Length: 118
Image (spheres, rainbow, N blue to C red):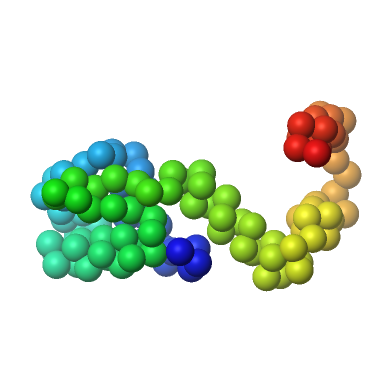
């Protein structure tokens, strides 16, 4: 479990699973056929790929998340900060804010977050 990037279609597919889990795989096929215009084989191919990435599990024809949406995107975000900003959260925040002045509410929320996590 190390590749936390999803292509656009994979992300749409993952959102379907996250919003409906646990979901029977035949029902997932029907939804993907209707919403994504996918064939059964496409659904199962993408599902297998995301199961191999450790995001979902398909057991006894029932698909469940191994990682919640929040866990997945949290890991993806941390990997981005590690790769682009050498793991420096302050450097990331400086770039993210891009010179924009933070509101008092944002500053207070950040202080609260830092206090709760140190």
